[in-house]
Image 1 (cartoon, rainbow, N blue to C red):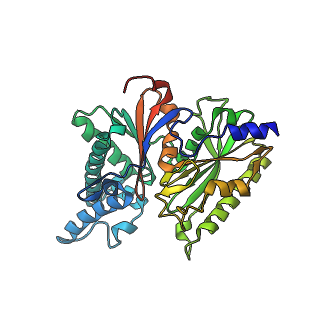
Image 2: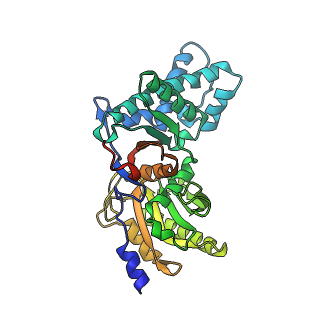
Image 3: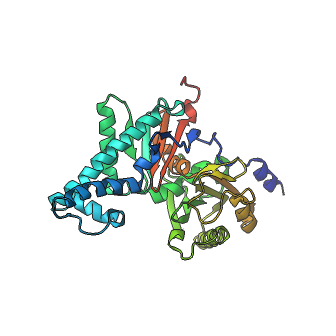
Length: 359
């Protein structure tokens, strides 16, 4: 079939540096110093450690305003309530942690900007689960103030979409533009160390050809970290296939015209053939095996979407989350993303329209 041949020949590589709207200058940098990986200082766990440090000092002198629960087990909601509540001491504990974390975040940003691939970065958006909290938003804003007070002309801002949705919406920017001809939506997958999320992204190209109105139409989540016993890799892939098959059925019932495309964000370094070469250690089972290829498994299970062969494109999860910002970063040339979650994801982009400008 001629259409099938065209689709195969027009396929793009996994983890491509040259994408439709941007060039990915670098991603998944693992910076170290004498104290270890600097990304470890700005994880969700690192923020809880900052909370615990202040609480420990107070316990030596009296009562802890946050009670007896360990800092690692206090919910984001509870910490946010402390910030906005009437208990001044509890608010002071969390504000103190926000200030310390913001100083750490500013230091990490400085280190990234000192790297050749990150020089001349004008904007950094911050995503990941930490951004989805009042404490996270305050820390991001405070870190920007710290950096600007030092004379650095940099915008540091929370990612526009909810992080859970950004990790799906960004997948639309992995697809070549011709893929959307005659289609109004696509399948997207966000694989993480705690859960796997799959969804349908409505492109809304008639409202905004630049994908600025793209939105998650429906999504499903599986929290594999909560499963006992820990699921195997094959069980996880089977679960993902079932989620995607269900979404395809839902799209068909809703008369959505799904593109024959699945965009996937996954932790770590992704090879051109879709293999995960490093960084998949938090996923269930061995995803870095040379005998495992997720894209191939999905195509085998879902060979066609509608009347066309399925194309699967994988990239690093921080890259994909950052791509959700593409329509909103047109006023700058070079920009990046940091995702603060269990660890620190990162990627730096140059807008394709600016590639001919001098670095």
